[in-house]
Structure formats: C-alpha cells, structure tokens
Length: 256
Image 1 (cartoon, rainbow, N blue to C red):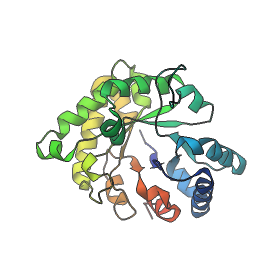
Image 2 (tube, one colour; image 1 turned 60 degrees about the vertical axis):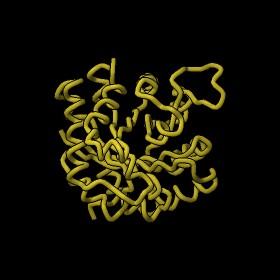
Image 3 (cartoon, one colour; image 1 turned 120 degrees about the vertical axis):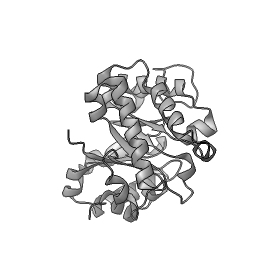
C-alpha cells in the first residue's frame, strides 16, 4: 500500500491571527500543485487562529489541511479554557495532535488521557496525531522501545482495527525537540518500524500497513530527506521550522 507523505507544521504558542494570515499566504505562494500531489500539508496553529486560517483556506481554495494542537475528551461542560472535538470539527479541522511531549511534561498528560482524546477525535470524524517519544535519560538507560510502545499501546487501547489504521503516529524523541539535536535517520527509522509493528500487532496487517508514521525532532530542510528515505517514516511533525514559510516550504519539497 502506497502511503502519501504527510507534513504537519505545529506552530505551538506562536503568531497572532494577523501574523498567521501572512505566514499562510507566503507558504501558499512558495508551493505548487505538484507539491500537494506528493504530500499532504497540514497547518496546526493556536486555537485563536483556527477560524481565521479556516476562512483563508476556504476563500482562496488552498489545499492545506487544518490541524489543532489539543482537545478535551468531553463533548461539552464546565471545563474552562478547554475546547471539544465537536467544536474543532465545525471549523473543518482534520487533524488533532494528541499526547505531545510538551503536554506530557508541562501539563500532566498521561497515556490514559491521550486515549480519551484519541477516541473523542475519532468520534468527531477527525484524525488524531498520536505523539510518542523518550526523554534523554530514558534513551541513555536503554528504555526507548519500552517507553514508546507503552505510550502507543495506551493511546490506541480499546480501539477497533479500523480506527487504529486511521490514526497518525508521530515519533518525537523529547531530547531532540527544540534542542538542535536530532536522532540519526537509521535510529529514527528503527523506532518507527517498531511503532508500525506495534500497530500491526494491535490492529492486524492492514492497520500496520495503512498507518502513517511521522518523525518529529528538530526537522529542517537539511535533514528531512534522510528521514523520509526510511521505509517506515512517512512524513514529519515540524515545530519551529514551520513558522518560517521559506523554511517550511523547503521541508515540504524535500524530494527536490
């Protein structure tokens, strides 16, 4: 099964809605239809920019996908500051990042909370982007395989094989995010193969073959091609490099 590349730009807590318009338009001008034939390109701005970017994408018929960085698992209620999956779906959000390492480290995200969010996202007809990754101490202790498989199994627990096939998995070694360091392509490829085999064991061959697995960890135009060349890496979850349209466009056009 041929898996189309997927490149997601995670803007994190950056850019006002006016700045977001300028960045999106500049990125659009730097890409061409052939780029979107080869890769699905998704922008994941802050909540305050979602409606603005949705309107821009629709008005100018831009082929970008729209992503959100977080979601609550309940449909509604007294959860001040939270946003439900249904609210995101009404904004044409197609992808939702779940279990990002910053959410785990700073906000107490657990595997069980990630599972609840995954189910909510799927129930609203969107695609969860399940993030897994080890810290530097876990890596140096030889715990990488145990950590990432435990996180992934926790997030995908109690899902059907069809649901497991529809998720996106992002391997983001915590020690390589925003540090300028990155995993070697062979190492990242090995972990992504392990993650694919985990999905296969949980959901069967079709799920294992269908799931798209991304690498995220200081991805830039200089290293993206080496990662994508690995059989089990289907794209990238890009952080800081996605804030600059020229840099992000170069990442999207990694084959050139």
